[in-house]
Image 1 (tube, one colour):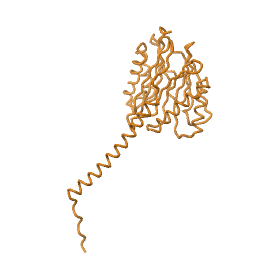
Image 2: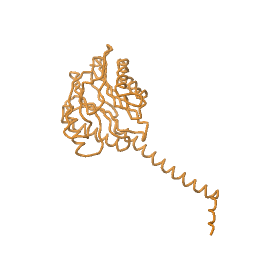
Image 3: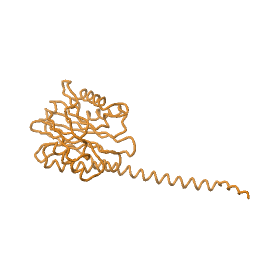
Image 4: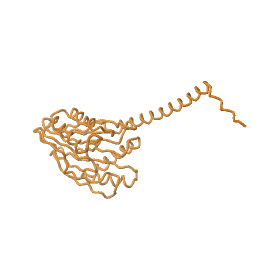
Length: 274
């Protein structure tokens, strides 16, 4: 027996199917928009509204969102005053680019602040924070640089956890990358990790600049090339206002072809304010 051919879809059937598919697409777009808005709100709330200042030191920071996925990531910067009057600063990058990465970043920032309230040494701060993250088993890890600034003597003590090194420059044109900061593993990977501490000084009338790898690494640049470009920018703009210098440094990310989010933290010596 011959099978009767299927009846061709009518115009009404086609319009009905088109309407159903359109409604599904709008629903998915609305859900994505809601996730992006949530991630952006988290990012705004979790980054500090202001950085601490003291006589002789001026600070500034910049953040640029990721280009892929949610318009959000796990990069952060922070600064706060310690109980003994010193200033603490941190910058870091959490694995991933989504709401979970942003939430983890917020927890890590709070954890670093809590540990720094009783641990004076930056290496000790990172060690305690690392052990806490490993014990909680979040399944994520983070790179971080944590530093302590002594306003009385102008000294910096710095520890790194898998993070890219800082860049410094003085008004005489000298500058460089702080490759001597050997550092340890990223936070959240291995319990009991040690984080060596090194001492630096913000050059008189100079700048000390920290970045995340979203600034210096991408399809077009290796980390070394990106840091060399940041060094060039910092040397050229070392006398600029901190906000202006931070804005110029984060532009390096446009040269690297980055898809990651990016953050910059600038510490600027200001002898006239002492």
